[in-house]
Length: 120
Length: 108
Image 1: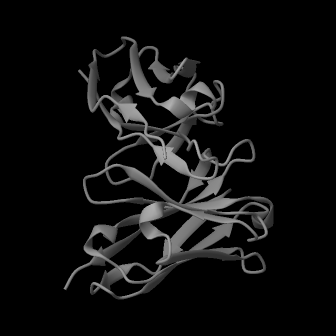
Image 2 (image 1 turned 180 degrees about the vertical axis):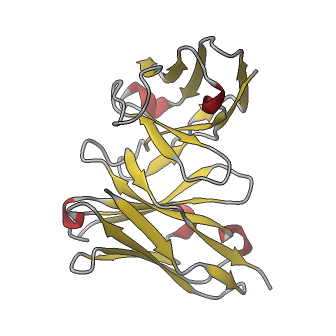
């Protein structure tokens, strides 16, 4: 059974940092692109970043470029999102998801999410 | 970047058919995928590629595409289908992903 479990969310002050983690199990992790998607309270889904199977390619939505870094450790079956210079508008539930092999925008399994709250 | 536009809300009578649409320039070149999200839960993929359903998704869910519009059709809507539905696709730049704003489906 495919499982994705996020952790690392919490309350942080504007300008602060958090490292989000996603533990994957139930599939050959190193064979899949992975992604982060976020959802602000009461709002829609927003794609944040993608990372290639071997970590050699990474893509970001413009609003987080230069502040967030996606990474992975295939030996630990883990995905990460380092979030720096956080702003109030980064407040959201952050989901990790597996990318389907057919296309980079088909997200076939999702975690339950971790909440990041940016507030003073 | 490109955008995907969805109607904010749609309603359907129990057992009837409803179509949820998603419009965007990128859809003339790429298929959309569709996600169902119920309150307090993570999204679930319901349709991807031309008209593929992941395992466990009822066959009353189907997808189609014409021009710059992708559609999710629920044939014989059930009470449990009441949820928010999101489309997504590839951005015109090729490396980014965009989501539609979501459609809240109410089953009457």
